[in-house]
Length: 347
Image 1 (cartoon, one colour):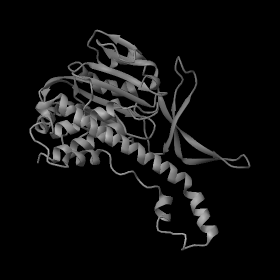
Image 2: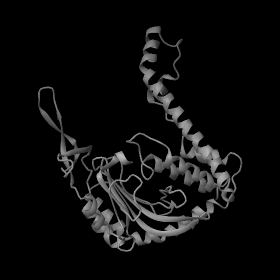
Image 3: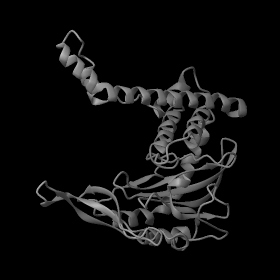
Image 4: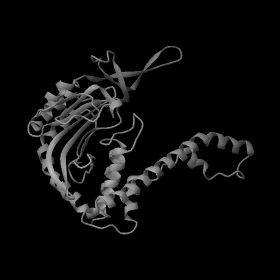
């Protein structure tokens, strides 16, 4: 993540951040206070997008560009993305206003910006709990995607003290995960949900109980693989390959057959590489499951153990600098799918 932090825009509470970027302060800060320490109150706005025709004529489209204003360390307007005309931003100062009353009781643990400001994240300290015989710190994670690729989300994310991995669940059924689309009601929707945040905090007990339930059952043969397959579904076949799979060399003229081979070569190579990569990740998760069983015999061969294997795989495996992080994006989705599959084994 260090290469993805926007400048030095990271705030940490008490414990130095592992990436050594940003500001660490030994205080209990509200969202507004933490925001001032790391300068994330930059404005974003939408502007009509145009298409320039060959004759130089500019035609306005029904899309908008998401634009970030200049900052002290990046003195130019930045286009973060192009979105539909209904997409509406929420400013960080507005989000801070809604969250300040909550962060007076549950202080900010981390706050930061990613990329050029297209993602904002913050965590609030929600106390402690014992899960599966281990000590956990509990947090609420708030993320805002300003690139049109995601929503504003509030999710529950316990952290194992023993290894600092994040157990983001993303469970809508647990009533502790909210995803708010960037439509014209984003501000009123956010204000409404943050007003009932205390109710969401009370429901964290339900999630903790579910997690503890994962450690009470022994897996039957093949059930560990079921959880891994749920976390890592089969690699999607590119459309061109799907369309050409039923065609053989005997079905078409030689020229057509050679064209099919040439046209699908790139797709097939990319598909094969992706399948190999996904298989390596699945194998790595299964290997971590066996390692976990050896290191924690009390919780060995349980739904908790296989979920932990997926969590640790997603938290610690390497990825390119623009890949999703452990707390949002596809990595978090994989952990959430694994949690749902593991929990289903206990019912």
